[in-house]
Length: 231
Ligand code: HEC
Ligand code: HEC
Image 1: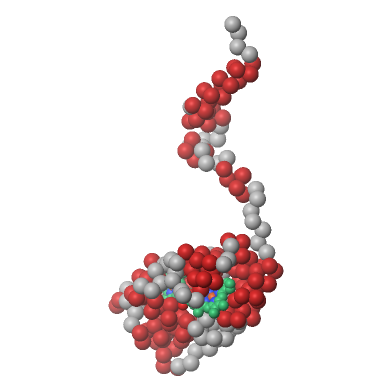
Image 2: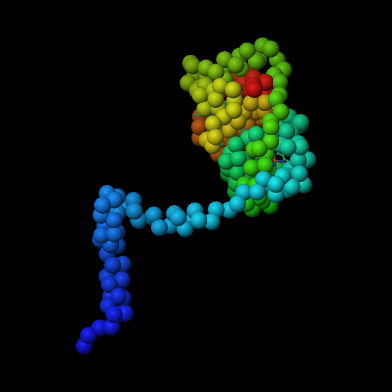
């Protein structure tokens, strides 16, 4: 007639799992935690227990083999159409590579290259280029650059264009991991990106789509020239 200890335990476990809220409440009543907040907790330590190891050396080897031809040694591209990647925040680099791969950021050049990269490749390469010192650039046109500086520091008030400095920082170093570094970037590349944000060719940032939407070509060229010389 009497149940075995094992089946009693089983009955308890089944009852407890049928009442998860009650079980959590009973488990940690003094912690003052809401059951809803406690529920996902067991998954977190397990996932964090084995993070993929980021390997900048492996990233550098891959970068030299596949990417340096266009992006330059150490990510300091000397070609105006190819962005400098040196010293860029790794999180931003990874985001771009993932979005090239998925097609969210369209590029006939970068899409097939990013498609060859695993998540680990992306993180390794990003850690490598992010750790390289960015070479300073220079502005080319005195008049343009004065207007560009005004836009960069103060925005365009009568059209509600926000100051670039507010997000990308006054010296263009950006704010990891949210806002990319801009200082010293090629003016041609910066201008092309602003046009793409404005015209919808690049739609991976609602913030930048809103900023660029109200800028004319002259303002874009001016701020791009200023950014090239920013350090
Ligand atoms: C054939 C030349 C070429 C090669 C090779 C190449 N890239 Fe690019 N890359 C470009 C161009 C051009 C762009 C700008 C794309 C655009 O117009 O949006 C770019 C953009 C990028 C960006 C975005 C930068 C930013 O500031 O938003 C990243 C990141 C990048 N490339 C990483 C890589 C990596 C990593 C490799 C090697 C696996 C690589 N590229 C190989 C030409 C190249
Ligand atoms: C509200 C914050 C914000 C403001 C203001 C802002 N930006 Fe950005 N910008 C961003 C974010 C976020 C990104 C990253 C987009 C992404 O993840 O692809 C970005 C990306 C960019 C890029 C692309 C960088 C690259 O390497 O491809 C350029 C160029 C740029 N911003 C220029 C500007 C300029 C010029 C201004 C001022 C006229 C400006 N931004 C104002 C938030 C901002």
